[in-house]
Length: 407
Image (cartoon, rainbow, N blue to C red; front, side, top):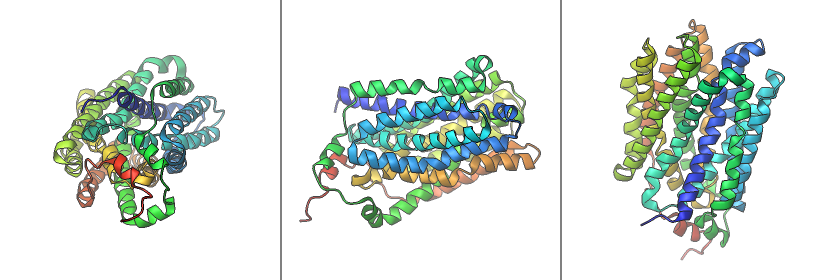
């Protein structure tokens, strides 16, 4: 089945939306040390901004998810992208740490909405047989954003400083123009619009076990990703004393691995199943741990980081398809994003926790990173085997049946 022009445009828009959202988020992780120096504080205190960004994402997933379920995926996505771009820009004008922390918390609300809305719009629009590879592509937007942030840090930081990094983050607002001109509404949402919908509370009550399971699973997933990414630049700068160009180069290498992992395991999940692909990808992290965390040279660390992110984002690459397929049809813009971001809320302590553990062990970031990554990988591999799987479900047809009388 050939893709239509509209299906290609939807996929491009959703990929870019998550890429640029992640780009705006990761600009912060490169400059924790600089912000701490300017505001005369320590890195763990600045890392609270990352914690609050992650903690506020469930609220954004709920707000924007409900708007998308009620008013459509397309207009909600445009508003969402415009808001997070504006908040990124304003963050660069922060006169003190308290203001910056508040702005990053608000940014977290906007960031939390994009993933669920964008993935629902895409998975409901593309052919069912393409969900695996597109799932990998969408999730590759996250390391793609990290990659762009790495390049911007390496090229522009010495000229613009940490405030200028946030000013660059307004660029995603241009994506709104592309969506307005080229992206159609989801056919599944259009089908649901013609029928009555159950309330959110009623739907969650009927699916409470699925919701609890999904939240626990996504908590482990978020410890896996944020535990291997958020403080890695700080680990390279503080523990290994690498200069910004070396840190940028290693970050670029690890994100190339992340993109490869997401695309590969997303595609593989179409053949072997979502659960099996996630299990295999997550377990790859275990033999890679020593090279990734405890190597001493830049080249060895780069190889370890490359392999680690193949594992991390390989497992994550299956998540957009997996969560959208198991989601109740009538709240698909809300459910995947909400359970994902609730997992983020629980895991939002990661940056502060890892920084605190590292400092208390003589700035041993390697120890803090390795413990979180290893435990998270094992938990994901076990949990995913107990989940359900609905690979290839017809989302438009099932959405059209919502509200029909039981026969």
